Image 1 (cartoon, rainbow, N blue to C red):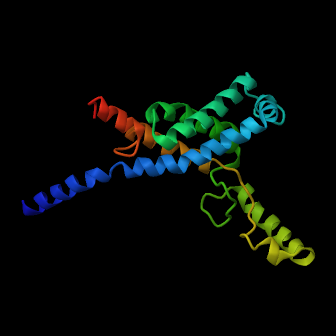
Image 2 (cartoon, rainbow, N blue to C red):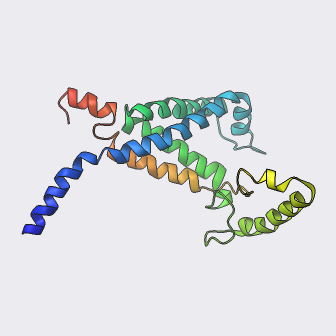
Image 3 (cartoon, rainbow, N blue to C red):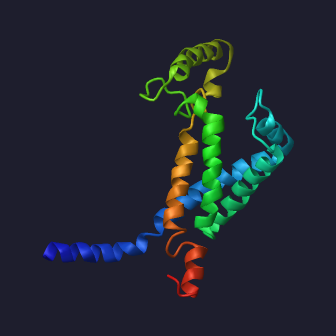
Length: 197
């Protein structure tokens, strides 16, 4: 019984920290989403062409509308995540955006975002990338300033799989379930002001 009481006191104390996880999710996702929206907006015509073209693009219907919806969801949604306003509502179009990205752009490349042939998730595309990366490094070591070229990090081959889009989807799903977070979001402050919390 004593252990149960101690554990309950621990839970009572830590419940005041339950806003930290949603805050961390919001602050991690917001710049990622805002940057993605900004990139689409900055290259709006190119994005529309890519969204709409069935031969070398995604072949989505109404590409202008789809681009506008993606830009709006990512820019406005990312901004609202920063302050934690309408978090659950904003998570919905962002989750849809991540699913569209995962299953129209990334799924053909498998799971991995970066080619890692040692991964148990490596597909044929990833395993064949190791030989290409080794050849590229060899050429750069022989004909380039390899030390300078790698001074900011190692060379990798982007596989562009669904890893990031699905990870972001799961993070958004958590925000949909948790909300913006206790003490750390405008959602909480407004609800508290209206005595709904």
